Amino acid sequence: MRYNRNEAFRFAFKEPLHARFSIYEVNGKEVETTEGEIQLMDLSPSGAKTYTELNIPYTANNSVKITIHFQLNESTYNFKGKIVWKKVWSDGFMYGVSFLVNEDMQQEIVKQLKIHVKSLKN
Image (tube, rainbow, N blue to C red; front, side):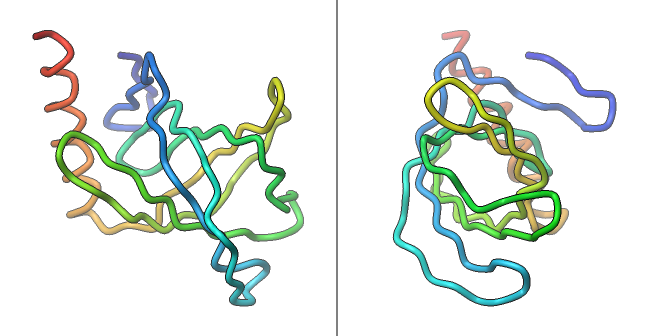
């Protein structure tokens, strides 16, 4: 597990965590999209590094908000987040997503990541 100085911790998955996402807002305007596949490369209490083959219409000059649906351990999550960076990667794109969650949900992520790490040791 790697640590980022600005975070409680950020867990990098050996095998990406499969998830689904949809866009719900672009530049402050509500939109509805179909769900697409996305992979969580790492996860922290405040966000995630993700990968998808889909080209999300994010640039530094616009705002894109998404909902990410994923399962960690036995719990299912639906987190809203804002894309904060984009990079071309392999056959797709990496995106940094900052979660729009309260402190209770951040603590829940920490708890679930600790459970996940323990399960890897068994």
